[in-house]
Length: 70
Image (cartoon, rainbow, N blue to C red; front, side, top):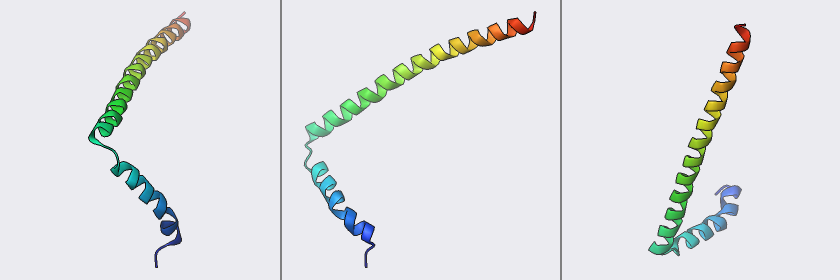
């Protein structure tokens, strides 16, 4: 006998498969394109944020070093 959790989730899985199977090649192209653009834009902005935070960190560390060396 199948576990109750598996049986209760089967309709959701079947619905998801039905929706995914109904997508055309154009739909998949749009989905993949939007996803790639989102990933690339997020990567660019995170990279810029990391660079800014590194500069700020180095400035703070240099400030701390000068206060201790006096």
